[in-house]
Length: 93
Image (cartoon, rainbow, N blue to C red):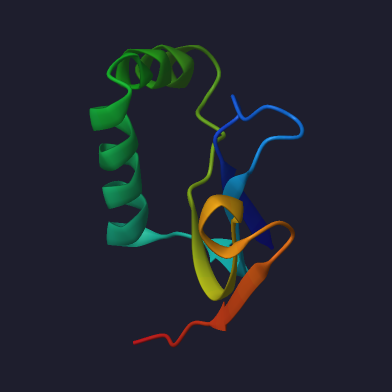
């Protein structure tokens, strides 16, 4: 699995910045799933009401997932130059 992070307002032709994370993903269960839902609800307060309404009407079908990055690829053209990627492996604890 991969995740890309960048500022969407970057203009074509100007120096860009961003990163890609590569790794694996699996379903979150138990305390980890509860924590993920609580974290999401604290960031998006309307989520809790939406979820509660959905559970009453038809059941809740969303699943939380845990992403475990193994490597990262950085692009920071203002800092490193055009088209230069910094690639690093990540160590899990």
